Image (cartoon, rainbow, N blue to C red; front, side, top):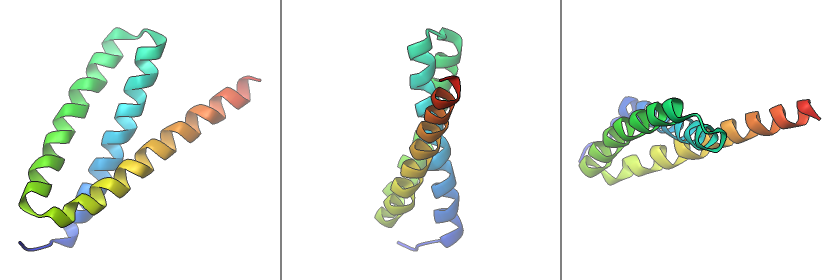
Length: 88
């Protein structure tokens, strides 16, 4: 089980993107935007497969996947909170 740093960085960013898209999916569902929600769901599952295949090869890839997931959610939630605060 070799650990490849470039693969780990790629997984980090893919995971951040995955979680950001999942957060946008939730926003789209809450707003009743069916086409956008369906598209976000499709992209989410496609990106999930990349992560699953990667950490099946090497369990250490779970670390960049988890960190990327945190960053992706954090960015979207902060962005949505900032949008709400600007409307007030």
